[in-house]
Length: 356
Image (tube, rainbow, N blue to C red; front, side, top):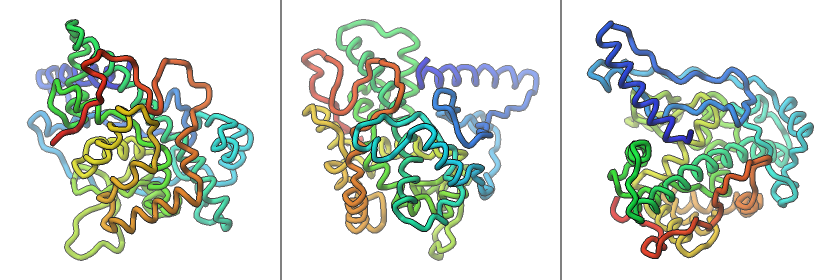
């Protein structure tokens, strides 16, 4: 069962529970459970609900979420370093293409990373921590993209979609903020983020994993939140009159998922999605450098922010990360880089975001 199928089933199940609860006065308590172990098996890593079912969604009242409590990582730099070595996870071998990336998903930044004196070692540990997360999220996105392509081809061929596919499209459209039935717009949004860009932004926004937000809240992309229902940490140097907080997460995987969804939905990144769709349409690989100029709006620093990202990507050879793959991945026929499955003639050009 794919990502949106699970979401659709959860949505139907939640509606049934609400009806039953209303009849027998059973309170609802649907929450994400935080993982207890720092090392998560990628195959069994908990996927957070794609929708937060809250009482106010059904006419009740929702209480404001308090300031997030610090999330203390359990594994230290020493234990993580040893684990990487035992698994044969060496960064140079991975980035050079000699070895695939292990499916090792850390829940939190290793404790003590900020105390590692040698910058080269500190950066390597950070990249080794974040890279599998980015690849895992991209893998999830590609599975959904593949399903969307199949639905798109079926619809263009005149075949009637079954109920599950129609529900999947409805959930996906709501999640990616496009009109229901606009498969072209949806296709432009359900796509990967090049690992080189994700790694560079994570490094810049989190100080290579040493910031308070990264250590206490698994926030490695510096995403702002203004919602009282979202957990977050208040910046200590927040300017007077500002009300934003830095959004926090139960684990690092949730942080990466939220980051990818942000780039794939927010109007500020329309150019990012447009250029990415053009690369797809031309059959070119999705790499970081061509997309970098489209991220000016990510930071108030604008062009200076992009210069920093470019420097991080160049000095640390992060462009090599765009070619790596996860280890032991079953051959599911997923399309990667610039490839796409065959489509009818009238669907050869990738969809554009238009004015959405």
